[in-house]
Length: 211
Ligand code: BEZ
Image 1 (tube, rainbow, N blue to C red):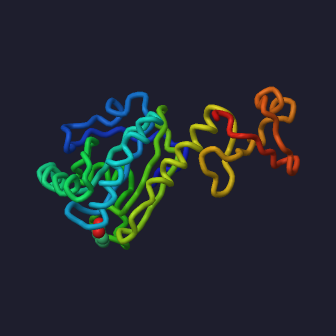
Image 2 (cartoon, protein in one colour):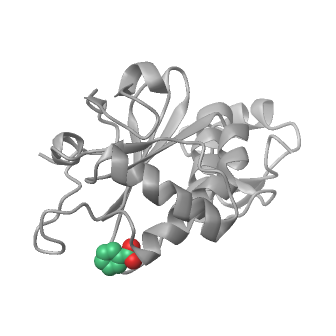
């Protein structure tokens, strides 16, 4: 059965390019971006894993650990990492799970056989510190993902958790946020000292609270 938003994700232990990982222990109190890609030594994946290495400080600023996965071996990962580092001029200092037995891919439903036989498609799971699933994305093998969008979603989720705001269409960091409908106007006045603009009673905009 596929994982649904809000579910507590299952734990696993699996080999990786940085040694064996027990997922819950490794994640600790951090958010996690767990993402799969089809195979080592493939062109789109080489660009994606390089970009994630480049963005690692942005993930760390947000208390997020990144964890890649493909169904190749540790040995294969270690060889390919050298290529990723050379091509993208980065250091890959995050683990890549070596899911040769497809234990994690099966547990997280990352293999979509009618799209890509026996290999993982491009899935993304954003998991919060309580191990709850907060976002899933599934991309085809032929389309590289936009990791700036993943960071944008993490910012939005953390704003919701910390400040009771949602984010409107195409929102970018620094723009106005939406006050969640569960807050009354009275509560909103207390919570948002910068005030809010009620475009409609149900659509109340307030400056981004943490700016
Ligand atoms: C790639 O990463 O470039 C790729 C992998 C599998 C199918 C198509 C592209």
